[in-house]
Each structure stands twice: as structure tokens, then as C-alpha cells.
Amino acid sequence: MKPAWQLWRDRRGRLSALRMAALALLLLPVTKALFDAGDIVHGARPLNNLIHRAGFWALVFLGLTLAVTPLRRIARYGNLVDVRRMLGVGAFFYIAMHLTLFTADQRFDLGKVVHEISHRVYLIIGATAWLGLATLAATSTDGMVRRLGGQRWRRLHQAIYAIALLALIHYFQQTKADVTVPTFAASLFVWLIAYRLLAWWQETSELSTLNLLALSITVSILTFIGEAIGIGIAFHVSPLRVLAVAFDFSAGFRPGWQVLAAGLSVVVIDAVRARWSHRTARPPAVAAE
Ligand code: HEM
Image (cartoon, rainbow, N blue to C red; front, side):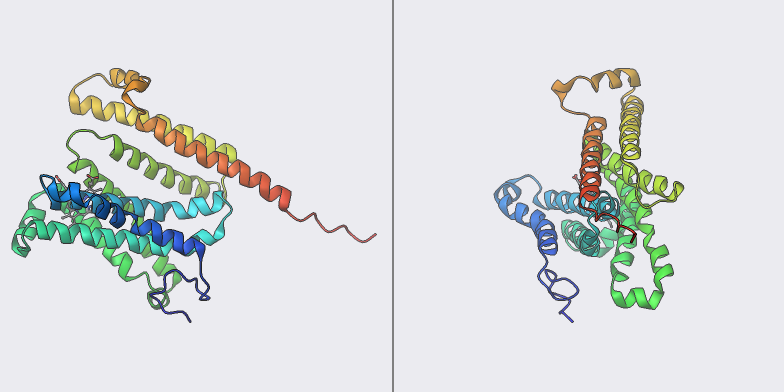
């Protein structure tokens, strides 16, 4: 058996290119922070900068963990499941850094940390998501899967959807002005959940290319409508005026277009992979005459 710390090796102890790529991806935020060290140190609030980076990347890795199941089906790449646990534990690593940096920002005064968290709704929501992620990380080992039993373990780990929702609410609440990135993150989350619901409803593990296209267009339309209503309420403007801005590309691409582009990329991958597997599938054995 391979030592658990050799993350770049698969279960059989062989070097795995996929695992090495996942590891490089997980280390990317640290590398980028080292690269930006000069700007961070000379910025107004270095610790706050790092808190934001750690929180953002934790959310990215949480999203990637949720994307593994749809992507491995769509890309017909079952091995992808091999890095799901790494990505999930990576999300927890960054969220542990997020809280540690927040504690450092409070000069390690634990009383102040508890006081701050308990007096701000967005921090209470973040802390609840934090505890949830910690529970999932602690029960992510093979030993815990055996101890809990497959079915109980799966049920417990379904909490990841609620955790991701809380993390998104926390993200929206702490965002002061531009909600473009949180809206895009939320729309991707909706896509991932809707994919699972549709597959469950159709009692299939693979959605057709047409279904993926319909799903992507629907989530894109919902994102435009949701953003228009949200901005309309927050800034007391007509949602129709906000919708009109969606077609003014000089101001950049709104999240509705971004999620549509992401969805269409997935549709293309599905169509190409479906054709490819059709071509490479073995011809059926000819019955003996
Ligand atoms: C005890 C738990 C947590 C605490 C104390 C905490 C604290 C904070 C603080 C202080 C900020 C910056 C707010 C500001 O500058 O006004 C922040 C931002 C953020 N947090 Fe948390 N948080 C917690 C849990 C989480 C969790 C579980 C996630 C996601 C999995 C998360 C994701 C984020 C994100 C995405 C941001 C914004 C990053 C950006 O600006 O790009 N946080 N959090």
C-alpha cells in the first residue's frame, strides 16, 4: 500500500498525471500569493487581502469538488473521481487558512473572534459552513467510510450542497459593491444542482446533449432574471433597465452570458465525447451463422 502523504500516486502506488495536475492546481493560490507578495505586503490591509484570497479559493475548490460527478459523466472520464477527495480536502485546507488568517487579524484574541462571529450574520453563516466542511473533511478517510457504512456516509456527505449554499450566501453578504463574480459562482452552483436533479428525475446517470443544452440556456435565463431583480431591489432601479445593460458588452459580459458560455463548453465536450465513444466502440459480435 502507498503512504497516504504521496498524493501524486494512485491507489495502486503508480504515478498519476491526473493527481499531479490536481496537486498543482491546489498549490496555485499559494504560488500566486507568493508571486503577489510585494503588492500584498505594501497594500492597505495585507491580512484582509489574504483572508479574501483564501475564502475565494476555498469556494473555487468546493465548486470543483461538486463539478467532478457531472464532468466525469459528460467527458466520459471515470478516473476523474480519483481527485474528488483531494479537491474537497483542498477546499477545507483553504477554509482553515481563511479562519486562521481571520484569527490573526483579531491578534489571536479568541474572545474577540467569538464576539465578532456571533455579532455578524454573514460570519455566523460562514462559521456554520466552516463547521460543516470540517465535519466532511474529518470523515473523508477510507476508515471513516467503513466505520459509518456506505449509505450513512453518502447521506452525511450530501450536506455539501447545503454547505455550498451557505458559503455562497456568506460571499454575497460580504460583497460590498460589484456582485458579478458571486452571481456567476451562484449560477454555476444552480447548474450543478439542476444537473443532478434532472438526472435523478429522468432516472439516468447521463443527460443527453439536448438536455444539457436546455439546462444551460435555462440557467442562463434565470441568471439574467435573478441578477436584474436583485440589482433592481438593491439599487431601486427597474429590473428591465438592468436587463437592457446585459446587451451592452462595452461594460463586460454579465454573469448570464458567462454561465451560458460555460454551459455551451460542456455541451460541446459532451457532443465530441459522444461521437468519439460511438466511433471507438467495438462493433457488436457477429452472430455465428
Ligand atoms: C468561521 C468561518 C468564517 C469566517 C470568520 C469568515 C470570515 C470572512 C471575512 C472576514 C471575510 C472578508 C470580509 C470583508 O473584508 O469585509 C470573508 C470573505 C469571504 N469568505 Fe469567509 N469566513 C468564514 C467562512 C467561510 C467559508 C466556509 C467560505 C467558503 C467555503 C468562505 C468564503 C469566503 C469568500 C468567498 C469570501 C470573499 C472572497 C473575495 O472577496 O473574493 N468563508 N470571510
